[in-house]
Length: 297
Length: 158
Image 1 (cartoon, rainbow over the protein chains, first blue to last red):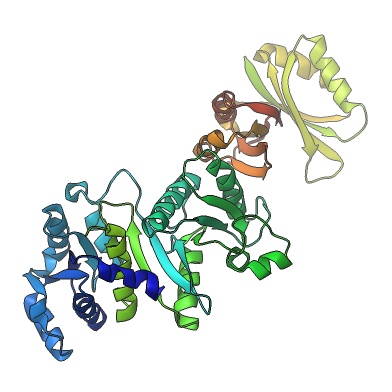
Image 2 (image 1 turned 90 degrees about the vertical axis):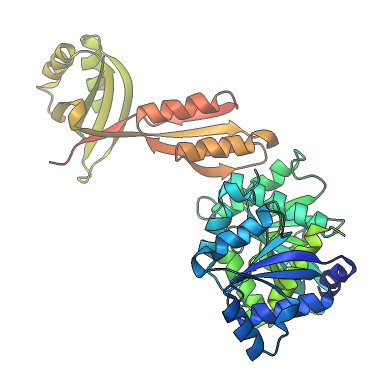
């Protein structure tokens, strides 16, 4: 994962507008991103607070551009920087996801497109170096089939933007067979596989339903007699709902102490949307992820 | 005109034939008929939707009045009626039509109860209008088979 994300070092720095960067993790991640030469941060918030916090952390704030803004207009100011083409992409600092997204969704900022917004996470399977994406663990709560189609589309597009050649999408559920009416996720997974034959998602393989292990581990898939091009070799996982995604994410990062990165896609620019409790490394990884998707320079 | 009748009978052989015969004698066409045991196992409630006016229904009631198998016969007024039927509908799946079928099923709150490579079965317990609407929407996509339970009804709670 480090190798994939660090490839953004080859790219020119782009301007990143960060709202309320008052926490240590956000400021440290900005300092590191600056040092890597991948972004030029525009920190939107109360200048006094940003300077004070930077001094406490011994971070040279002068390398950042601070957009001094009153508390009640920080989110709008962040969005308007993108709208006025003064920023190339956007990041959430110390602010709730709901409030942040609500402001960005206002059509006047032109951040929304006709596509839906969805969140894509990036992880690595320990000891293998294999990277996989997962969507959606943060935005779409209980997507219906139509919304899942768009989540898959965004995730496939993201994988293609990262340069993944053979995109293998696994639709996750708890079991590999359709069980109705008890497990509607199995139905959607089965039907998504069929729908994918229309070519709607472009060049990729989509299969399901899969349990988590059989999607990523060929040995486990073989043991269960699950075959196909995706079984055990998936590099994009689509979870049936936000709870499943959130639990997988936290299991990987909290229990397994693995790195993760996350970006909101489907808008006019990638949106870096870390959790306020994420450490600076996760925030930096997420900025790198977003920078790679912009592909300018 | 459609009338919904509720007929409480003893669960014995030949009862249905007697009721059908009484209806035939006065020229009533049965539109749908659903029957099932009630909380007392020896009794069955039949909900019969007929194409007849109140006077003709009254005549059928008179024919049945001496019948010891018939416990109660009510012509249920529409404004005092809680009625519902169930439809099971099997539709053909083509990859392109999958989102459309699922959108229609969501629109009508129908449940997908089975899927295969070639077909999907939807179930919808609802009123007649909504069920007719579902059928109308799915017809162009390709209905393979369908089955309607016929209306069942109880009187509204006081």
